[in-house]
Structures are given as C-alpha cells and as structure tokens.
Image (cartoon, rainbow, N blue to C red):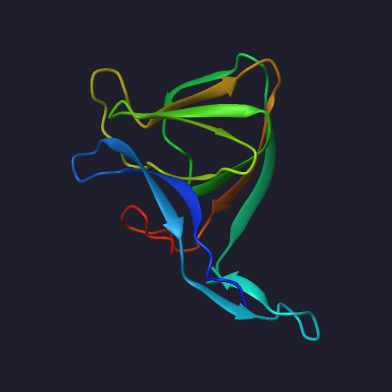
Length: 147
C-alpha cells in the first residue's frame, strides 16, 4: 500500500475585515477503500453532500474578469490553458491543468476599487475551466477547511 496522499489546492476566501486572500492548502484526509467492490481499493477523500451545479467555461485568449466575487462558493478546475486569480491582498496565483482552487470570496467589502478578485487567461490559448458551484453544500468557514 502506498503512503497517504497530499493533494494541493489554492483557497480564495474573505477574512474578517472583508478582504479577499489566497492560501496554498492541501487535502490530506483520505481513506483506502473500494469505490464499488470488487474494484480494488483506492484513496478517497471525504464526500461532500448537497446540491451542486457543474458547468464548463471557456475563457477566450486575453479575457479579463475585473474585480468581482465568486457568485457562489465554487471549485475551479483548469482542464486546458492557463489562468490567473489575483486577490485583494495582492497575491496573484497562476494555474494550469492539474492545479485547482476553491473560490470562497463572497461578502468582501470594497477597498481602493477592489472587491473580490480579478481573474483572466494567460498565454495564447483559451482557458477551459470546470466549475463546481456549491448551491447548498457546506463550504468551509475558514481557509484550508477542505481536508
């Protein structure tokens, strides 16, 4: 059996002062079990329950989403291309396929014309993103709450 995995992700959240921030986190709580016997066991994270909406977005080359909040707590999973997210604290992350982030920057206050985050494509190909919005599924109240 292999060592228990650690899967990194970025977490964008709103602090107590209403400012969006980003932190590199990792999911580390996995259990070795079969998804459906007789399939061999695999590492599985904790399931999340509740209504969710899944959609695919394609951001054109040069696309910029000026300062805005995520409409709902949501996972953003790049499938192709590259994109960036800049939070109000000035942290800018750049992601490609294989990296992912959780957008939980709702309830920000405006500071110097900034509210929420900016995001956009990088490079000369569109960014293809899988978005999983948590309609009523529980989102963590603090950064790195997904384990």
